[in-house]
Length: 156
Image 1 (cartoon, helix red, strand yellow):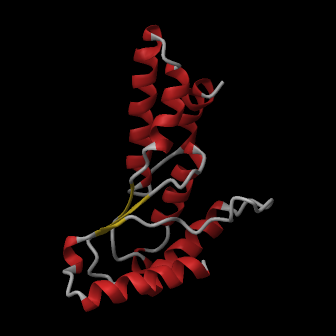
Image 2 (cartoon, rainbow, N blue to C red):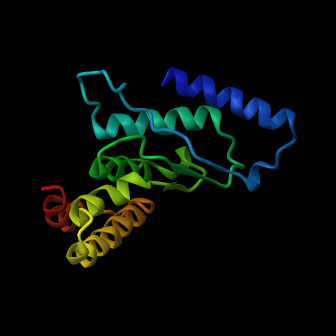
């Protein structure tokens, strides 16, 4: 939280001093999650609340949008975090919150594909579903249950 706050404060000070039109940028920040060495996994609602809080403190409302990186998060967890952020009251998030998840969309599909031509259709199906789930999370309308069966099969 504190590191993200300091970095974003510096970024927007530099953008301001360079007269960057904030209406023309999309910010690609991290979510506020526990460190990779931390044994305690933060609750989804805590990650969502702290992430939106630090963004509210540092990112001007003029910014066109925020597209999160998955940051090495598990596919499903990245989607759940985005969903939880988009369910917070809109007054705390004046910018659209969406995703820029390469790994969190492709990871399960890559595992299902495993380099085998006969698995291509299955991998494509999983990629499409992961994309649909994250698109839904961008509007706060993601429901976990429909994704779970494909997701579980993909990572086995």
